[in-house]
Image (cartoon, rainbow, N blue to C red; front, side, top):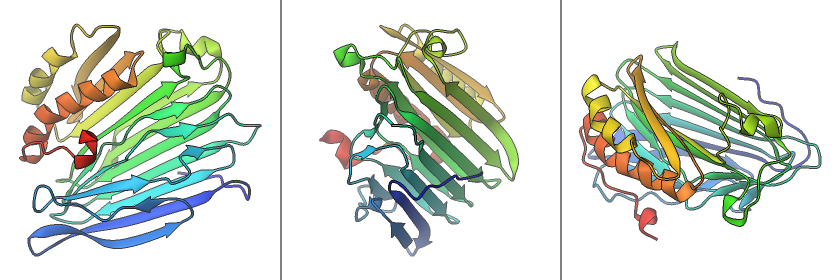
Length: 275
């Protein structure tokens, strides 16, 4: 994946390595540059490492580049989230970038962040690459809000590029790309169909039994819609609507079902979700 950087704006990078030691997963390595950090891990489950990724400035502007590289080693299990929404502000021309590179080797990674909010006039590119080995487990979601629907603000101007690539043993399982480059894309059938909030949840390895367990919860959603598919051993849930809170509630509800069937563990929500 090509990363284009600029000398303007924050150039931030966070590298985390998780290892299984004795009876629990530990944050074994950490390297950070610029305004990206991680809090001291929590262990509400005893052995699974829960960690919160922080971006202290609270917003991303044109010229900023945020890179997050997470490595999960054999038998390790890490759950990462964020304490609040990430805001992408209006740009005077420079692009803001966020790159996520996840590598899981015979372990488990759960990436369950809060939503991204894109202000009108933002120029952004978000790239996620997830590399799994043959037995690795992954559950992750991304929730994006274009504009601020709660105040009637639309993403009438701006540019947002979203790319997600999921691989197992180097073979692509999912290659996803969406470009919102003008207001027309907000209303097309292949775009957002007039809805400001879109979200995707991925879980693997998944089975037909998991698909059937999740499907009923994606039906009859007020002021929105959701669908679920299964291919290449990946469960894919997509949401379109007008509320990030609704997307979060749906995905957290589904996570309660998905986690035991994918990881063999009951769902233990991060403590910060209760605040």
